[in-house]
Amino acid sequence: MLMTLVRNRDRCPGMDSEFLLCFPGRFEDELRAAGGRVHRVPEVRIRHPWTVLKARRELDRILTREEFDVAVAHGNWQQAMFGPGVRRRIPRFVHFLHNPLEPGSWLALWARRTPVDLLVANSRFVAASADRLYPGVPVGICHCPVEAVQPTGAGTVRRDTRVELRTAEDDVVILQASRMEEWKGLRVHVEALGRLRDLPGWVAWIAGGAQLDRERQFLQEMQERALALGIADRIRFLGQRRDVDRLFASADIHCQPNTGPEPFGIAFVEALHAGRPVVTSNCGGGAEIVDASCGILTPPGDVEAVAAALRRLVTDPTLRRSLGQRGPSRATEVSDPERQLRILHRLLSCGDS
Image (cartoon, rainbow, N blue to C red; front, top):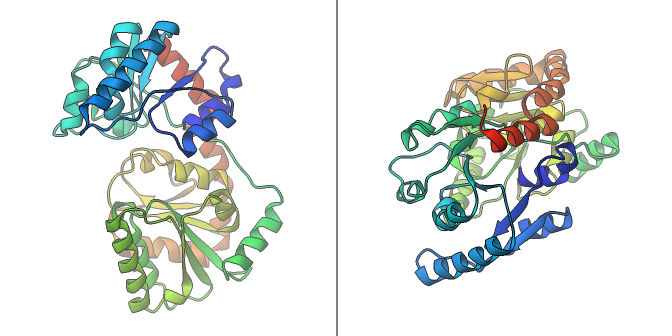
């Protein structure tokens, strides 16, 4: 989202963004390469209180030299770490909610000790949680801006990607591109694919790398389950990918049947931009993005409903085509960068929702 903000800054000339980071890495490199202005403070470890004090002192020096109209914390951690210094130096302080607030979280309670002037949520679902910790604080909604990124030479990309992933040109490809977390619905997806074992002509691509031990264990469990269901030869577990735009351009369906609500769902918007019908659960942010014009919503955790939706799409190319054709316009309605950046500018300026 922040990279999209930087790349599209000319679309909202009244808003000039700068960024405060604690940790070096890919995000900082990409921000700088895109022309974003980055301020660095020393790395912070909560278990080492002196690192918090050191970073706060550096922030104070930055705010002595620079002048800002508004500060935005993109999470409880950022608000807790830097809220006190920001509150003293910058007239307006905003918390951008990317996930629902959890009243029992010690970090959320710590963050709340620094008051904010406004909460901005990425979906109605997330906005509904704001009153749990911030009663009376105004709440605005700004969807994540998502660019329509199409790889050049789409026909060649499709052919080359399918060759790379051992997939026939006429196979119907079902793609899930998500983190390797169970609530993203991969278990439901694999079980639903097992119900399609008798149906020829489909292949599934699962894109997403396991990073934590529990994710690696879950991935192994899903691979073993695919083997037990007799569909292991039809599922490609792709691991971490940096070419998701190529995968969307080369697939036919995007399926992510969440068992828990998605706060927003950038992958759904990317799939719609690529003209791919989406199968997901009727909950959370996903249900605010996908409707009957561009996809199929199923009850959370309902394997049979997901299997039925996939069977319809695999066997009915006319339905796939009609839902896919509506996708790009629906993605623009939800997440057009220029519109969302102007909404964000208005919210940060005056708080009107």
